[in-house]
Image (cartoon, rainbow, N blue to C red; front, side, top):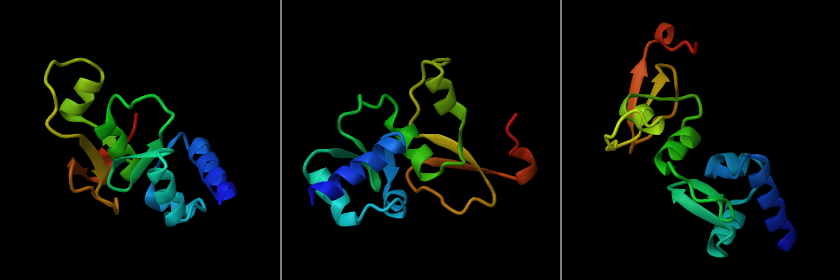
Length: 123
């Protein structure tokens, strides 16, 4: 079982230390292994279905990490972006992100702004 845990931890490290449950399963980590790592405090659950390695430094923007993990093609916008870049003193009430209208996954706890495809070009 130790080999399985070490393999799972190496997958976490390869992916930057933060994984969504579905991404972990696609990477070869069985859900039981993920929960075992959580119970042994080797990974920390930062939101429903999002885990990070426990030995990483504390996350300064957990809401933005959650949005980026759940919706990888999203772009942080509005007050969330201003706060991240320290351009405002306002504290965002939620994480705001924009996605294309064709995006398939929406998060329920964040503010999502859906834009038409032609408006969603990264410059």
